[in-house]
Image 1 (cartoon, helix red, strand yellow):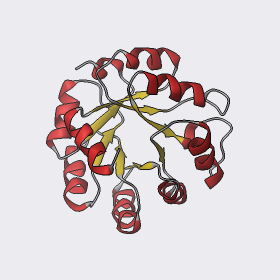
Image 2 (cartoon, rainbow, N blue to C red; image 1 turned 180 degrees about the vertical axis):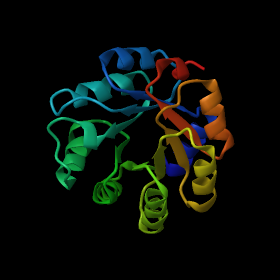
Image 3 (tube, rainbow, N blue to C red; image 1 turned 120 degrees about the horizontal axis):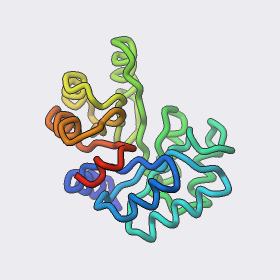
Image 4 (tube, one colour; image 1 turned 90 degrees about the horizontal axis):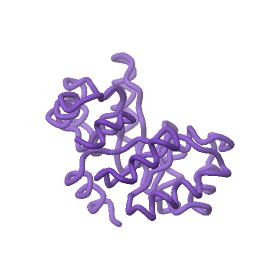
Length: 189
């Protein structure tokens, strides 16, 4: 899959299932969400978790910062690349994003927008960033999403605190390419 194909897929199916446990993983397999963010697991279970999602026809991203037993170093990306069939990774760490791109994986850089300083830092980091997509949390800030979507050279995924159809439509209407949510109700909108 190319980057253009991934963006097209998210444009067609803009709800990303963010799974945080086994029950969510089983539920998302039955959803129409085509892209899944795996936010849990450990080095022993992540290969099987990814494999189950791939068998269900999903495009899978592993949040390497949240997998128990992986360090915040490039070797974590190597582990995912060599021991799973994941399509990409998610991380808050620019070095891991760069390394993932070098390994041929898609990369989503996650940013927490806590205040105006954090927003300025996002814009600064994006100038040199190599991520295919960016994810901003919380995703219920239409003005900020509109600003980032207008200035960032990367497509924006809005995540965090998206609880219903109104939140999802607000984020998408503000310019987000897609939304991600751990709320299973949102997966079936």
